[in-house]
Image (cartoon, rainbow, N blue to C red):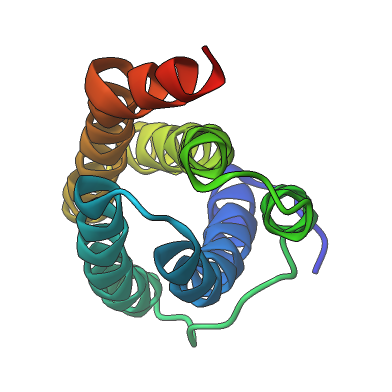
Length: 166
């Protein structure tokens, strides 16, 4: 499809983030199994459930645009997930692995925040307030997850890893 209008760009970006969310959903299962910290495990489980809802919202977004939900391969998310997988393959001690996985997950969240921020702005600019509202709901969830992961890291997981190294 040739991207010639803001509406085309919005649709292409929605297809990208739709694929990104589906990739992330699969990755969360591995992350949940890999981490040892209970709050972190719960945060990933909660966000996995949120991601399922976000995929449903994206399907609604496509419906609002009279389009069939379909993704366009997201190379960025694939790369971020590969980076996280390489951490799992390194055989890091559990405390250090938790720290590294939080950083990898936050990179994924930051990508999603940027993507949802963009499509939200496009929808607003096009005057599609219903779509903008739908996208803003997901954008806020992504920001909340990023904040939660940061809090878990700063208040607990990072300290445990530093104490382990001492």
